[in-house]
Length: 455
Image 1 (cartoon, rainbow, N blue to C red):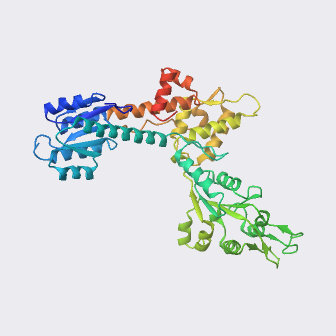
Image 2 (cartoon, rainbow, N blue to C red; image 1 turned 180 degrees about the vertical axis):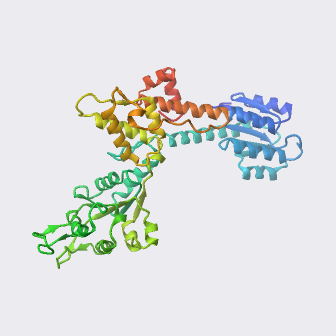
C-alpha cells in the first residue's frame, strides 16, 4: 500500500481485540501505527502523537457490546484534535451508530469484518485530505505584505484593510474612515485617491477640527469679493479646488451643525454657492471623510445629522489600532528609523537592541503609529550608542509571555515558531544570521520556516 506523503504519518488504531490489533498493524505497514485498547489509552496516544487519522472501534471496554464508550471516545478525540480524521469501525448490523458517529464529526465509517484493501483505501483518502487541509492552513497563515504602496503593514488585520481599499477605490462612492488618532486614516485616503479614476485630479485636505467655525464655511465653499469685511477679492473654496479629484474631510465629527446641513446639500445636489454669490456652481468631486469619534452615538445625542452620516458612509472602513495589529509595530519602527537616519547629518543608529524590539512589541501604543514615529525620531537623535535601547525610547521593559497551553507538543510548536519569528525579525529577515542566532544550520532553518509557514 502506498501511503500519502504527509509530515505526520502516525495512525492511531483504537481496538480492544488483540487479534484485530495485529491484523490492522499489518494492513497499515506504510504508516507509523500506534495502538490503544480503550478510551483512556486512546486519549493518551492522542495527546502524545496528535495523529492525523484514527480508526476507532465503537465497541470499547468496559461495555464492548454497546457503542456508548466508543462515541464518548470520538467526542473526546475531536475536542482535543479537531482536525483529526476519525474512521469509526462498527459491527455489520450497527448502521445506526455509524450514522450517529458521522453526525458527531467522524470522517467516515467502516463495517466489520475487516477487508484490508477497502479499509486501507479509506485511510489513504483520510490522510490525503488531512494533508491538503494542513497545507491550506499553512498558506492562510503565511505573512502577507501590504498591497498598497506607501502603507507599511504586515499584520493580517491591516492587509485585509488594504485589500478592502483596493476594491473600494475604483468605485466612485463616498468612504468613511474610522479609527483612533494616528492609525493612518489620511494615508488610506491618499491611497483611495491614487487608485481611483481621479488619480490625475487634485487631492484636497481640510481638517474640520483645526479651522475656527467662523472661517470654516469660507474655507470649504469660498466667497465673492465684498461678501464680508476683508473680502477684497474672489476666493475659491476647497470643495471647488477639488473639482475632478478627491476632497478629504478629516475629523468630520467636529464639523459644526450649521455646516453639516450645507455639506449635505452639496452632497445631494453636487453644487455649491460661494459666500456672497448667487449662482450655483457644479462641482464633480469624490468625498472621503475620517473621524476618531463615534458618529452613531453623536447621532443619538443630536450632535451629528443622521442623513449626512448615511451620505458620507456609503462604504465604511474600520481601521484597527496599532495594539491590535500583531507584528506591525516592529515593522513600522524599522521604517521610521530608516527614514530618520537617511540624509541625517552625523552618525545615527540604524538598528534596535533586542530589549527595544521586545518593548516595541509589548507596548500598547495609545497614540498609535504617530506616537511610535515620534519616539523613534527622538531616540534616533538622543541615542549615544550604535543601537537604540529601551531607555532611548523611554518605554517600559516587556513583560513575560502569556500562559502557554499544557500540551507539550503544542508548547514546543508555539515556542519554536516564536523563536524563529523573533530571530528573523531581529536580523531583518537575513536567514544566515537568524540561523546562527538559533544555533541551527541554514538548511535546517529553511525546513523549519517551511514547516511553520514562514518562508
